[in-house]
Image (cartoon, rainbow, N blue to C red; front, top):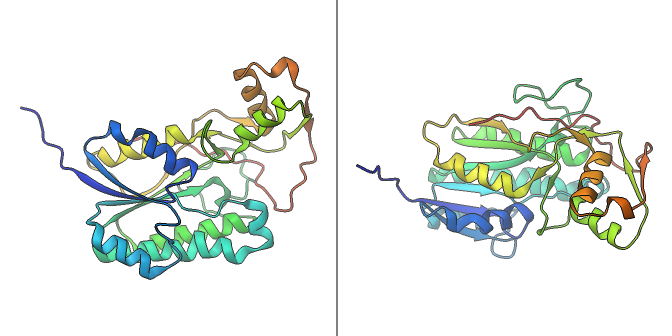
Length: 268
């Protein structure tokens, strides 16, 4: 006899970003899940009244928070906006989820770590962010852990999508096709993560029974530098032989960035 899987209702915030769009791409493959996709126009998560209203009326089982302020350079110069979106707004979501019995799935980052560890970061390692973006994301994580019992914090790294959003993958392709010289640092190492793979992980995670709440790490698992990632992108698109790519040791950045961004992947 086939087991009945109850329908689960899911609110996805930040639905117009690359991860939100990636979830939309595969939503039809999960008939057990009913989605409400809310972009920033439909739901401003910095407005607690809006957050409370949509979660109160939605009868949701889960909220996947894909909304974030991700401009690392701008966060350094204008940290108030980063903290408003990545910390205070996350507090709003956590409070509303607690009030209405919703499980929060929050997407966080490798940048909560300082990059000084000589091996991959585990979920048990103590965060110590070195830039405002990382600090704002860590603040959001702390709010969730203080407020909620039912939550999943999923840290990921070097997120990209081949179609959606503005990201390193698409920037490299655009510059290469225009014939620009690519100057890419090899001073930072991490694990590039396709948003399509993260989307699948999240939805499969929701359907997994006997889940353990807490912090998870998810990446595509292959360690490389930004220079190595750029080379892979060029090779994949047949542009390696026609593109001038230069290894740049002095990466010009206003914000400090962790040299080691490798997350030890946790499988379910």
